[in-house]
Image 1: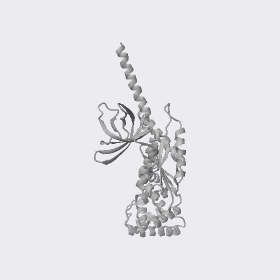
Image 2: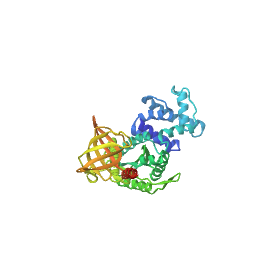
Image 3: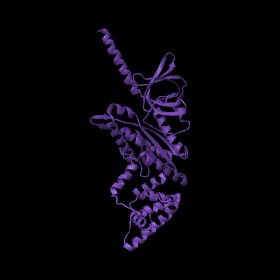
Image 4: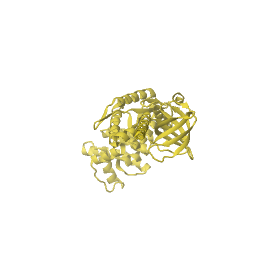
Length: 387
């Protein structure tokens, strides 16, 4: 029902004429059956009318609208006809109230859009995604989905503050909104993640649009309160029916491709392929030591690495470390001289009790910062020793 509700709201917002709106509702009814009539009343009036009665009520409302138009010799809008019919011909609307349209639109807007970026919110996207995929399957068309994640966003928040981070989210959201086509649905998926749903779009055209967005973000010059900085995004693309016809799997594939884009060095768009990891990653099964940074008495965990690439490492651990945490991994590659890697956890997946697969993107900037701090402490200690 959430999918149909989203479709009705979207139809209401995209049509200025009641006749066009009604034609769209009738088309939905032909595609999805009698349940649409029940959802129409739920969405437009908040009334929960039984399905079998809702079908007859909807037919009567349309007939009542035509009769009122003949009596008044003018067009009668749908909501007026619906209110008059439900109030005088049924027991469903006993105490009707007038609500200012701006209040109604504000409530609708809050249920559909993200307050910070103005893009669709996660709730609306989930419903729209199911609806669009259903239409795609019915009419045998293509559909592509692009996940986008802001690179090094946590570092931006930590160094310049959350206010600057919010401004960056707004600007990147605006770039995505302006670049997308009218039929596309752009949403803030959560945190610094965005998603773009592209109906009737096969993989190549979706990639071209994703690349255009990536380049526009890369070229954007951010300036907030005298602070100048640049941002980049990494994205993952998956398409129906090329990659999968299962909604959950298709989202996971796009998410996986985003992780691969991060691991390949960030600031790029990766297209999901089953064998893609073979080209980007090298298998590495070694015992590793894992420590979360930023705490005085951080526990050291023993894990096993699975594979590694230029931009990240995948390992197994018996503890679910938090996503976004900065960690240090010691990998004994060259005898007694371990490889020390510092980065951010971007994925945690449970495979059983005390068994977790964890993905970390390597932050060379963070490694340089910590190395500089250690050198400064060493120099400071040497100065004291010479006093």
